[in-house]
Length: 418
View (tube, rainbow, N blue to C red):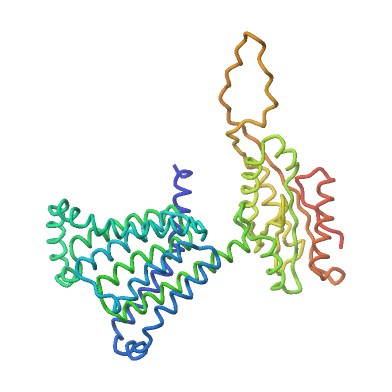
């Protein structure tokens, strides 16, 4: 039961860490706006152009980094920013509200597909069709959902007459459906892009409900900033985190080295017989082993920071510690990996099947049995000293110690002679 709950709790934790900061920011922003409206209006009364400028900047940045969905999101927000320039009848206003809502749901459930002519035409056609379908379908949906809308109308009126005056029951129903669909998608696909799109979905609806130009201005500018942040954050993650294992990459290591002082220890780790393991069980299983070992190394105690150096090699840096001080922590993580049982659900890579003799049927394939295997790791430890003060030299010393650990029979820790 605990094993089943662990991935769910991990997903919930990631969701909260991503979702709560923007929620807190917008809560503080709107609190300041509603309690200091006159002060804020004196600042932004002549800044109407900022909504267009911020959306243009966000769209250009998203375009450069291949985030097509954020570019389309900027186009949808542009329809709200151009509220003064557009003269909409009540019917067209409803179409714009539902079309933008459905558009953001579509963007949440689609993928970034680049900016080729075919992908651009497809995505823009889908967005236009959502507005057309909203225009054609709204009267029929209103008719079918009238019994539900009556009870929802009375509920809204009981909650607040002000809410009822701002939000029709039909719009409330669309908003609830859109928010639930978006939240479900964000929970199972928790990343910066989906987070930004979800806030755009929710706040675009609130901008339709609360029709105030200054409120729309600060919201659109804030959403544009959130779009830029999500693009830059994802790009940083791609550049400085290893895609397979999820731990910091070699580039992040080179940047981290610049922050180190004069006292630190470098540990180089390598998975024993990894090439043979790959040849026996296949590269897919090998990738899973790499992720497992990386996750264990990443939990090293004692203040160590783990990086994937390349292939099956990992680097752990312990700032402000000597080699003698880090040995217990390295030994603990080595033992943790050696004691861990890896359950393989696939058979080892089979030999080339022999052709059956004439008149005989090929033997039926037996289901693969679960197999338990173990992996071990070797470690080389080297600390910064007067003779070896350059990081590249310390790395070489750690590599020599790692070679000594391999020569000593593997699955052990060796310290460089310095």
